[in-house]
Every structure is written in C-alpha cells, then in structure tokens.
Image (cartoon, rainbow, N blue to C red):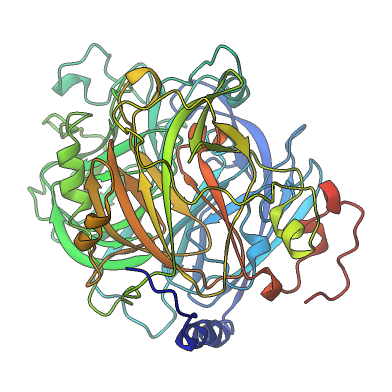
Length: 579
C-alpha cells in the first residue's frame, strides 16, 4: 500500500537516532591493517594457478574487530597492470559512502603502485567478508573474512563453546582475463561450471577424499599433509556446541552445506539475528553469510564429513569436502560413511523450504507499514548490438569512468545518463515466453531517492534467451539492510501484496529470486551516498545485471580527494570543505 503524503518527521528522528548511535559506538578502538594486493602462485585445488592474494596469503587475512571499532585499512595495489578496490560486504558505511569499495560508483579504481586508505566504523556485530569489486577479481581469489564481535559486556542471543570460520568459493582453471574476454565477445563464450569448490581456499581437483566410501570415478586423494590444497580440518570436542560462521564468496555457484549426522541450527543471517531453526542441510547463495550452531553429540569414535555441493545449476563440479574431527580420534582417520548427498540441483522446493523458514528474531526492528515508492525490476537476458547481456527493465548497466559519488555530489554533467531509468516493465510481458527484447540497451542511469523514503523493490525473474529456462539470482544491496517481505511464483500481481510479511520479516542485505518467481523487499533510504544493487553472480554483474541507487548526496561530507581523482574529476580539487 502506498501513501502520497510528505515523509513523516518520524523518519528524520530515525536517521538522527542512527547517527547518534554511531556517535555512541564510535569511541571504540582504531584497528589498522596494511593490505598489499598482488598476484601470486597458489594451488587452491592441487593445480598450480595464479591467484590474487593479500600479503602473500590466499584467501586474504581475516579482519577481526568489535562493534564500534574503526577500521583503517591501507590498501596498496601491487597488481601489475590493473586497478583494484575492496568492498566490505555487509558493512553499511554510515557516514563513509566513499569507503564502500565499488569502482566507478563510490571511488576510482586504485591504480597499480598506488595506495588508498579505507576508514570506516563497524557499527554492528555480525559475520561479514570483503572482496574485490572490479572486473572479475573476486573470481580470481580476492576475498577474506571480516568478523565483528559484540562490544565488551554484551552477550550473544545464543550460547556456544567455540567457533570456526567457513569461507565458501568456487574455482576455475581458466584465467579471469580469459573469462572476461569470453563474456565480452561475439560469439558469446560462457565461463562454464567451476572446476572445484573450495572451503577456506582449499579444494581438490581430479581426486576425492571420499573415493573409498562412495561411487565415483575419481581416485582417492592422498595427502602428505603440507599441500596447500589439503583440507582444513575442523577440530572439536565431544558434547560441545560450536558456532560456524559461513560466508559464500562464490562467483557463480549456489551451494548446499551439510555435516554428516549433525543438525544445523541457524541463528544469524547477513549480520542479523534470526529466529533459530534446525535443518539437516542449508542452501547458501553467493553473497550470503550465516551463523549456525552445531552440537557434537554423535559417536566420538568417528569423524564426519563437511560437504558442499552445487545447487541451481546442473553441476559438473564434484562436492567440496573436509572433516569434522572429534579430538578423540586422529584427524587422519577419514569417515567410514559416504558424505551427505547434495539435493538434486533443480529441486527448488527444497531450496524454498529452507529460505521460507528464515524470520527475524523477536525484538528486531519491524518494517514501515507503507511505502513511498515502488520499483518493479525485471531481469532478462538480452542481445545488445550482438553482445549477450543481462538487463533490468531492458537496461544493461554500464558503469561510467567517473564515480557516481563525485558526479552527483559536485553536479558534473555528462558523466552518466541523467535520464530516469524505468520504474517498471510492460504489463503484457510474458515471463515464460519472453521476446528477444530488441529495444534493450546499455545505460548508466540512477534511481534517485529522497532522504528517508521507504522504497519497495519487487524483483521479477523470467526466462533466459532461447527458452533455456530460468535461473536463480542472488541480489545484494550496498549501504543498507532490507526487510524481505515475501516470495512468490510466476509474475507479481497487485494482489500478491496481501501475502507480505510485516510481522517478522528477516533483515538481510542479500536476497534470492527463484526461477520464474518474484521476491519483495522494503528498505529505508536513510544512508546518504550512491549504492549499487546487483546480482551477486560475478559474470552476471559483469554483463550488466544491476542498478544504481542514490540518496541525499547533499548530506555527504568530507570525501577524500584520492577517492575521486579520475574521469571528469581528475583535475578538480575537492580538498576544500564541501557541503
């Protein structure tokens, strides 16, 4: 339901409270990190490859902080011929939109040999990660964990005896330069499925740890113990409860996670508490983070498989495996049972059953009852001048050379398309049998919001070109959390609004839209800045599957000059104070 009256003054109070809370927590510790981003040789899946690492490590170092701390990361680009940035995934960047780490949006790409200082406050505890946001650099290995603990004296909503971090990713033997070229070519060359799945940067190609206990053509992996691809074992004591923090940095794959004979209790999603619920396995989409509790109440004389497998795409990639080792046993003893079976790749009912169980924990902020503006965003696959693209409402995103943050803040004309992008799509559009969309084009327009506007977004999925079905798309919003109001099958209709959950919808910054379905979300535009909203599948974003939101740029203060020294702003001095 929409209301046309002016934005209530209560929303101004809400924003004032947010800034006040940030002021209260900003007295925390300043934690300084120096990151050198560089190419290096690695063996993520036992095959030597060039990876992007940080300080000689792949994955990058884990950043740890407490709620209210300020992080100061000095990033030096030691890549030879390309720019880079780091995005702090899930950190809302209140007051520091220039630190979001998005090339052409919040900042200029950091040139080879140059350094950039990221300074921002982590205002909320939770499980987060960081990753490259330039080209396909995340695919090449530029990622790591960012863990924010509660401030001293505060208690979690759940108890546990220990914790582990589990970073999930997919891995190709084809270089990202070759992948980028294929995605930008006529004829189009898809990246195809990954060769391996990695857990904490480790996987196995052309062998299986479980070959002796399952039906597979792969030989048994044999490790000496010092290999860079040897699995990272999770060591546990019997009859304890462990928190496993999970983040998916995958470039393409949606994954299913299971631990043999153990239940998973989901307690956190995207940095927000959720109403705890218990599952045997869980689907995890690119960009999502979770915390689950695992109680080690099984036979202490055995070890158990931790497995991940591909969902949502017909897999040509073997399961990724590691071991939950009860310390009553040697870690070298492999489980005697086969790994958990990954659900059928196209069993979407299994996926929906998990997703539909996620509700906010009691006490979580509830969404506004009404919205001020609604966007209906249809994602389609299109041909644009012969190139295969993904588009939103027939517009495929093409980022400008001048960062939006500077262009809009300083009123620079000509740097991006000032024509308003479409708020909706044709009423007679058939999502099951779509046309070839001959009117699709590239664009760089921006959805402009007033400060504190309540915005509804309906993501609508459709068929891909040539009748090849519909795909899962996980979407990520920068600078905000949103309430997930509901999901549905088919095309969204006005009557579907009655299905919205306004009682206890989860707060997320990632959301999935299922094949031939829709997903509804609501957020408050309370964070001055420019923020991308995009599919988190790396090749899809590279092909244009995203939009740009901007809000209240007049309220943005103190942008570092080095953030915007490129494009049309290259010769402009912004060291002077600006409003």
